[in-house]
Length: 129
Image (cartoon, rainbow, N blue to C red; front, side, top):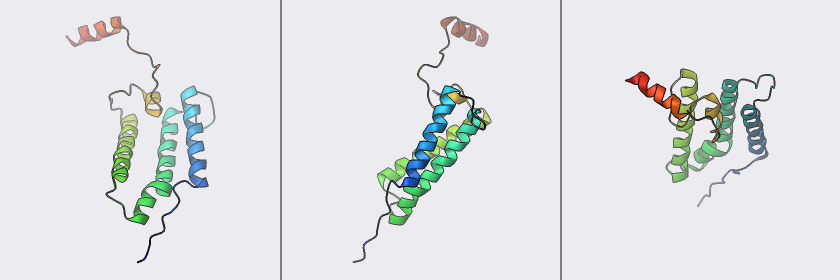
């Protein structure tokens, strides 16, 4: 019986890309002024590209090599990838998604984000009536 050699899950390339992604998130969240990375939308595009690259290296590429298309972890990966693409599309089209109030929260959800004050909520409700 012929055995299938499975590719490595974590390679130096994946580690380097993950560190690059972490640096982009850090710069985007802290608001530091770095050329090309000072725009949240550019940061989101870069993270999507890096994420897709990591996925081809250790995710979908590994699934294709082993033929495990219906494995539960593969299905979870499909769902998470679809959600990431939906969030990216929402940022650029201007859709409002639950739990994501602005572009910075699309980059990384900030628990300390400014929440509307009760007077603002009353004003919004009176405007609807």
